[in-house]
Image (cartoon, rainbow, N blue to C red; front, side, top):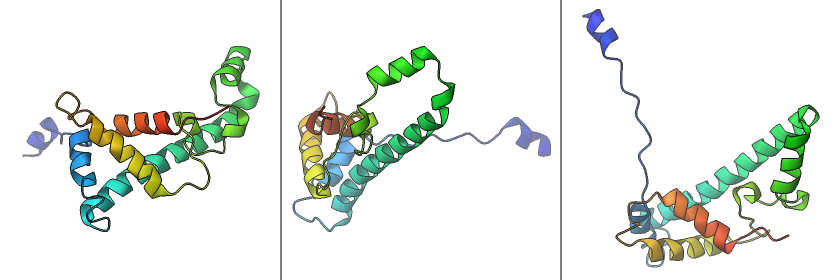
Length: 146
């Protein structure tokens, strides 16, 4: 009996992909019932995406500061010429390619992203990952200005 358990290890499960179409199905309730479960799902998904980008930026910048003394010349040059300008480091999402003004209402950002999601929720892209469209929308509408 123990031998069977060793032969068939439990399968790892990947996180289920949230598609544009699925996110739009929640976001469609934003206007009619903004406090409802579906609208809140939509808002919190987009807020979570932004929070994740901000946290990732922070961790990357801290790691770069710690490694600063150990960089070779090529890496240092690449960071200097390819990374956002130092003034943008404190702007949420700057390393992800978008910058949010401070303060900007979350609902304004959500409304902008949802409009893009709805526009892209067509047969050819409906099964595309929602996270890609959310990121594209944030980059398109909230670019980091130099």
